Length: 236
Ligand SMILES: [Zn+2]
Image 1 (cartoon, helix red, strand yellow):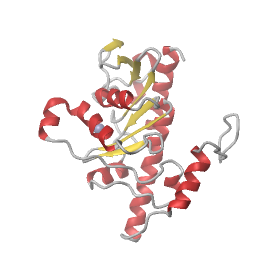
Image 2 (cartoon, rainbow, N blue to C red; image 1 turned 180 degrees about the vertical axis):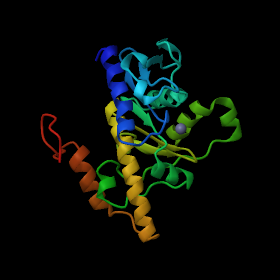
Image 3 (cartoon, rainbow, N blue to C red; image 1 turned 90 degrees about the vertical axis):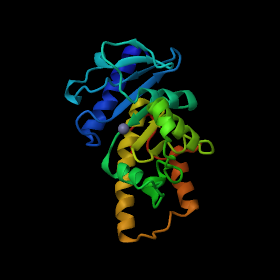
Image 4 (cartoon, rainbow, N blue to C red; image 1 turned 180 degrees about the horizontal axis):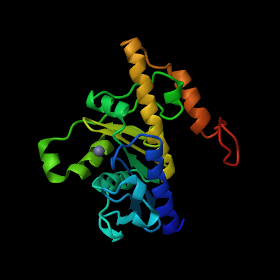
């Protein structure tokens, strides 16, 4: 994919967050990576969604230096680059402050997998990170946020669980592309909304049985995935 196409894809993924109602004002950001060139394309900082265009996206090296672009990149850029360096299989990262996912992050609770809606997208609970220490915040708040996520995934496959709740903050999601990272952010918000309703009905609701979790995840994401249609047709 040419860098021009990646700029368009990242711009579109950012607009998707806005269209789906998971970001307010200039909250939220999506990036995508060109691994051959070793650069990411990310939303500029503080630009309203209505004014976002592909040419306003900022190209940043994996060492966090701006390579191309007039505007400053998102303030969360260093979180994104830490994730790209640690998780070589991902192609896009998204961050929002969507209300229900933030509520679980603020409660400092992982998001349990109560049902198949969740299981279709995340193979188990959505992890929650440990809080940052004063020293980590002083040293490099955004970079350390990324490192806290990476530490939490030391024994978790980031491709099987492409989402996390940052303690006291909110969700980061990722995927094979910027578009998939953004759609995972929208889906996580819905998963969190449904989980909140579940625990409101029964505070001791049990997690989904492991064999049903495995069945649902595998039929969408396993080596022999059979959910949906071939040739990119939309599943219903
Ligand atoms: Zn944030």
